[in-house]
Length: 46
Figure (cartoon, rainbow, N blue to C red):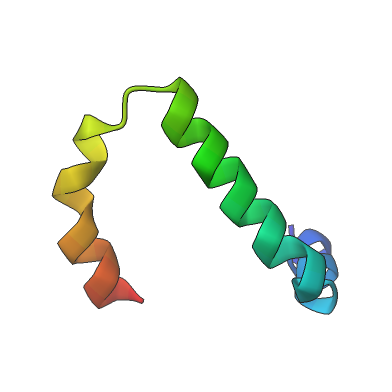
């Protein structure tokens, strides 16, 4: 797991846009209404 995190950390230029595209795709394909309740807690967590 640590090796995977280090690999992602070294390739942030690719990892950030890929995560954004995957999140957008998930939002288009899956019901995401339940995520509304997580916006505030996750914002404070960041």
